[in-house]
Amino acid sequence: MKDRTSTRSIVEAGLFTAINVVLILASIYIPFIYFVGIFLWPIPIALTF
Image 1 (spheres, rainbow, N blue to C red):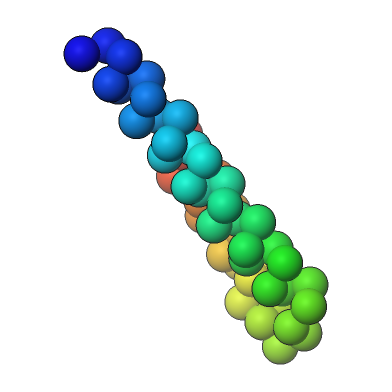
Image 2 (cartoon, rainbow, N blue to C red; image 1 turned 60 degrees about the vertical axis):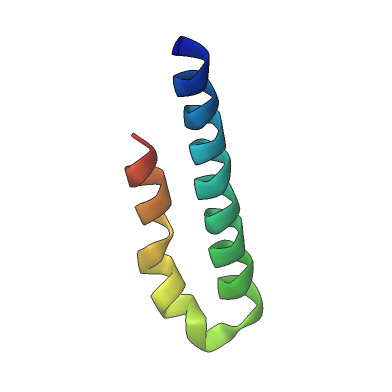
């Protein structure tokens, strides 16, 4: 059961990282999303811890 918990943590961290990357790229390339993205960037990082 210990392996399943470890695997779940790795998958969860990978998902939050992917979400964060998408938010960053969208904020860079779509100017009007920048202001929304700047407030949403820390959310996946905060949920990881």
